[in-house]
Amino acid sequence: MTTSPEADPTVDAVIIGAGFAGMYALRRFRDELGLDVRVFERASDVGGTWFWNRYPGARCDVESMYYSYSFSEELEQEWDWTERYATQPEILAYANHVADRFALRETITFDTSVDSAEFDESENTWVVRTDTGETVRARFLISAVGCLSSSRVPDIAGSADFTGELLHTGRWPHDGADLAGKRVAVIGTGSSGVQAIPEIARTAGHLTVFQRTPHFVIPAGNRPLAPAHVANIKSDYQTLREECRHSYGGTIVELPIGSALEFDESARRAEMDRRWSVGGTDVMATFTDTSVNLDANTILADYAREQILAYVDEPELAAHLTPRDYPIGAKRICLGTDYYTTFNRENVTLVDVRDTPITRLTQAGIVAGEQEYEFDVIVFATGYDAMTGAVLAIDIKGVGGESLRDAWAAGPRTLLGLSTAGFPNLFFITGPGSPSVLVNVIVSIEQHVDWIHDLIAHVARNDIARVEAQPQAQDDWVDHVNERSKRSFLTKVANWYQGANVPGKPRVFMPYVGGMGPYRQSCDEVAAAGYAGFTLTPALQSAPA
Ligand code: NAP
Image (cartoon, rainbow, N blue to C red):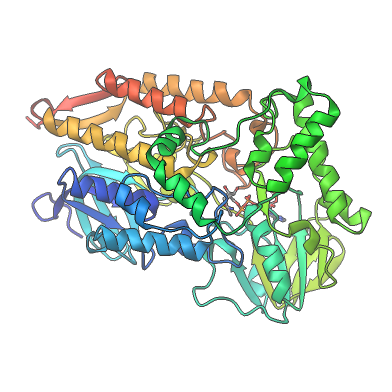
């Protein structure tokens, strides 16, 4: 293995990942800054999470007209989304189109994982090693590994004993899974399970759903996009995109009618009925105070609970499917199509494992409580080691050989989610401490890449060799992130935002709840103040004696 600066090829930037973040970073850094860039991607093609998540029913729950890049007017005008919420194949086709249009693939090395990255202080470069044995030096290291890319199968005893097929929604076989007529189990009822369950029920012989915590599922209201609607948006895309960039969630939502507490029951119900029938996340935006006031929250939660009772034929089954012990929105809201009514099918059974957890797998299937259930296929819809799993899978060592795993042992600490003290010239796209998973992630990605792009341009103009977050500025940002999250219901229940789904993971609320627009302003202010909170070391000063 080569380690000397003379022997290893050196580039300006290494980008890890060729999902939406890595692709856009490549486009901006290579084509606009003229940097020499290498991109390493473990998959055999572009698309990131959309490359892997091929499970039946997979689609995005941000509206497709806004879950797309805004950086190229030509791109946004030429691409036609067909549905309100795009399917995984359509999003992947879009990613492929972008890769072709901007000739991205020629700079991406596929089927290659970055194993380690070590900061060489004497050269101010990162020494990046891959699982194919390559070593590359880079001035900047950009983590574009995604927040929900490290899929997680819970440690259940006996998993190796099962003789049927084990699948995870986030690692679905590319040639599909043959579920026709089979006895299928789905474990998990988060966003992935909620989308997969109705589709699997249509083909499986029998589907058994293992539910630990019921989620609130709002009807997606998915539909084909009317050409007139698309034309309307496209005629004013720039204004709408700008609105997204400065909004709370990075997308266009129908404005709330006001506080839930200021309307009488009939006015509230009329509005909730109307929004529920249209479907989509606008339901969550019905009132201004659903996410901050428990009484207001209960009004919407009770309404959603009533709907579940109406969808499900058997009241006892409906009771099991109904969330009762946390505020609506405290676990990520799910958008579903035919979700609750799927449980009325004769070939679908719900097993509530809240009080009788799954204890082991056997040759034949799953044991929960006293009972063994037999299956041909078990589908884990059990989520991800979110936000930190993929980056900490890489052995990253910064100043003084400190490992990122050690630095974040008590939870991730960043300045603006972009950078972490002790790891110069390393930037995270949608890292912990930024809005990331709480907003339209494409808007988040573009904002982060644009900010890093401007920083690199500044660095080049000023002959700066090293950029790093100052510990005090980082502490202040972490305090701010924590302070904001304290007020949110998202911290009031076990969820993956706090790492609660991964045993042993520190319970730290990772994303920034302050919203896309205000967050963007914070980043802009830092840049306008000459990158306040970052230490920028000129090349001469940092040169070895
Ligand atoms: P998730 O939200 O973490 O859900 C995992 C599910 O598995 C939960 O129901 C969890 O129950 C259950 N589970 C985990 N371990 C279990 C065990 N040992 N026994 C029984 N149940 C177990 O994962 P996800 O559904 O893949 O979604 C993750 C995130 O990805 C979403 O929140 C969303 O941000 C994103 N996503 C988005 C879309 C979309 O755009 N529509 C689609 C899919 C995913 P508990 O709740 O009790 O822990």
